Image (cartoon, rainbow, N blue to C red; front, side, top):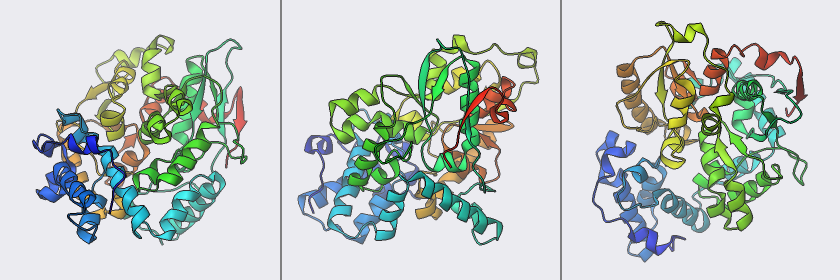
Length: 413
């Protein structure tokens, strides 16, 4: 089976092994086949036709959480994420690697009303104890109703930004969006929500989950539709690390100048706020005291290893909280989008290592800037909050985020 990989990228790996300590699946199994260099060698052999794309090869590809921590550690700059997605793309095209129901599910993410309706059904099943929430990494209580997002009114000459809402996060964690919009309002920034595209859909899925699954045609279609909902040239702010990483990489995914220009407008929301920190209200007297809340910062892999934008989280939170760091050098928590559902045992083992690092760090709450990570860690009993929620609390905006006073409603659910 030929894999749609760039030969030069595949040749970059010299099997030095410096990536091994940074690979979560190698750390928990100790097996070479579950390491980046083991997987790259398997891709080479299948690509050359020396080995078949059999169940063993599929297992090696499927068990990768795609955290891309190996890329940060690699002195040769091997683009492991692209190699892995190419391998899965080849499998999806040549085999029955992705069954019809998964393909249908990934396609449905682009139709936000379906996502909201499905979330409500799941919430009902959860309340009827038909869904093992902890095992699936779901929030303790999915919302039955999705309240309208509220954008605070600001001065007519305020700087404008777009705010990306996404698919699953918008259905399950709209309170994070509300907190982010309240913070932007307090900064005097005019946030705009996605506009309807030619299919009449606003926002929707960026294509990240489909891309990770090797369904590149679906990912490209979703990415193209998402681009159409953010016209103009204003910055696009994203409060989900996984979505932000995908949107910043659309130039590679779509290969057009339009996509590259679009990606240049995308910022993680903490990244953008840190660059405009002078607009933030200063910390109050409580933040200057010795009893400031202690927050442990967990870096989502797609923020740290892909976007390389994890430091702004600290810049944004440090004036208001006492921050503590983990000692695991940014190892993955095991969430990985759909990974915690598709590979539950490995996912739990990886999470156990992260829990150990969090316990050693201390802190009354964990800050995580990605919905998958926050749900995965919360399912283990931790109090996990998005940095924007913490910042909104510190600025006294928690009530304002949902009261609608002086704000514009826009119901997407």
